[in-house]
Length: 400
Image 1: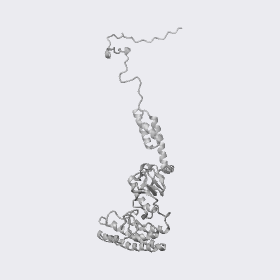
Image 2 (image 1 turned 120 degrees about the vertical axis):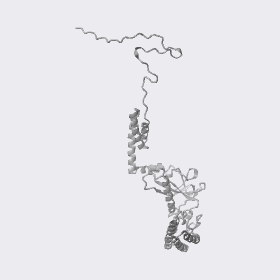
Image 3 (image 1 turned 30 degrees about the vertical axis):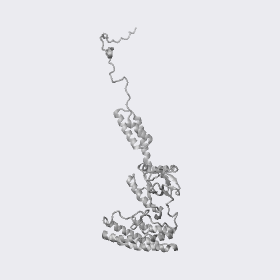
Image 4 (image 1 turned 180 degrees about the vertical axis):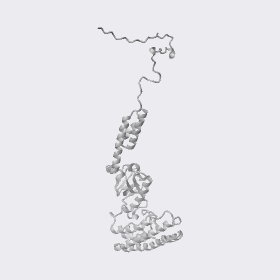
């Protein structure tokens, strides 16, 4: 039995070939022939191949931030945004977005762990240790002297050159402290106010004899920045510098337990009580705020009483005993005057007593005691009664 051949599929009938005339192309050349068999040519603006979809920008940014791990929260956020845009727009970059989000999540977890365990502070301390020999102001220690580029320590400067204090130098470190009690960067103004208040108070522990500090010396400080705070920096460095940058400083200003004897320290600790009280003079006068001024006068009177007690209790050397006791006697009288000022009921009464205090106070009696104790004997420039000036450059006519 034979198998018949398969049927031949029917063919579509062909129409007659198109006849001219044909359309003319540009410049008179023959135009395209009409397509036979019903096929259409590619239209203008389209090609036979599909162009690739663009790469999503946030996906690229997320991957970069994830690798660098510098801002992990931003990298994670950009990764999530990129995945949403890729699904909606059909863009490429899903792998980069996923990788960036994963790396940023890991970085964020590590930063959280470091903050919880103090790892950031350890990193900052390690940074400072590593920079110890690289001329960084972060490595300055109490008692060290240094020069800065440009010869001025005003403004922010963190590149320094340590030099012996006996040589000419731009600054001398007298204290440093850590800012505590803040969960986040408190702002430039708060950092500056804290540094200003603390540094001016700490200078007396390093330079106990304010008469030995030149009048053209002022207090400067290096503070944390917003950027260094994120790395764990909390330290403020307090510095002595000359207000005339060209003049600079020569020799150390340090005078404390390392350079003074027991009698000198006892005298300076006693007179510092009155100096500190005088430094608290209100900014507003008694006409504006009588209560603040009478309260200040009361604090001065009480401080002078404690000061005289300390001066009389110490066993002074024979040649210094009488001059020191003369200072104590003068402070007794002045303390009573300050008590009367504290009892004033109006600004006129306050000024009446205050003017008498100006007349009574004389630094010469202090000079005699200081000479016997071998302390500085030239009062600071602008020294006068009533205080209110900083101990480094003026204050009470009795002692500062």
